[in-house]
Length: 327
Image 1: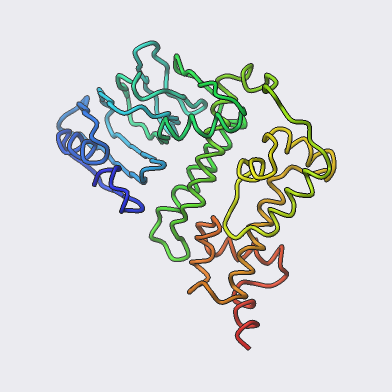
Image 2 (image 1 turned 180 degrees about the vertical axis):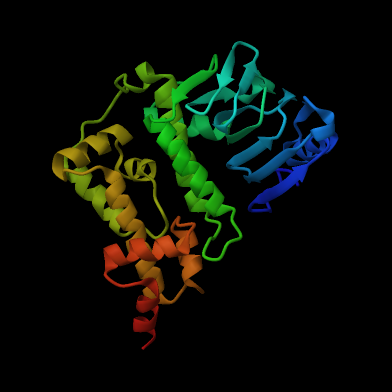
């Protein structure tokens, strides 16, 4: 059940534990992390863990009945965000302690984490991103090798851009690891989620670095933008803005600026339409076995939502396209 098992697309655990030892054991099974759990009232100990994840992203939803303490020893370095949906407590690192409350989220580095102390019934959601993946995505966004250093706990309001993004990410991760009808696991969706969250964390924690001009930036022309549009319209697999910028030979920020100047829109609008157009081509060619497989390939984890987005762009539902091309 290790996250290093790359042959398994995802792992999901949804259990209620009445023993601290059982919680400690399942945390070790998930990611090899040593953890010591203790409850404020051993006779009424209850820990509800809902874990969804793979080697790219992991999400822990934890609920305690009577509070308790957890002490961690992480050997791998990841970037984490914790948000409380209910209750209060404290998150502790080697450098700072911060209150956990429902109006704010906390950003931390796992190798700094010492643990948490929940004083009452609480429900928290935590998302973890591999540090190496985080650094790679941030470097591509900043267009130079300049590591983001998380030296403390960072607190952000839930009504901020990062707070809203965290809510969306949590929802999409649930979808990706759901067994409900109409939900599929999409590696592309996970990739897009991780990229958006990584860049937003970096911009929040080091805004002065993110806003500094990149070295050796190439100016953007209308020809660059036309080339980018052609690449997006003819993509055979989902592309990110970083992929397009690299193919054109300019930086991400230059490409964003060019889209605003020459097209009056940000690139992500055309990128999303490009994913729908790619799905349409796959459905028309008959190369994919099912509509769900097409949705998964192009980064949609909910088939029903994919059908709605598809209709807005194409003017018909995916099933209509399949029937039309089978005649």
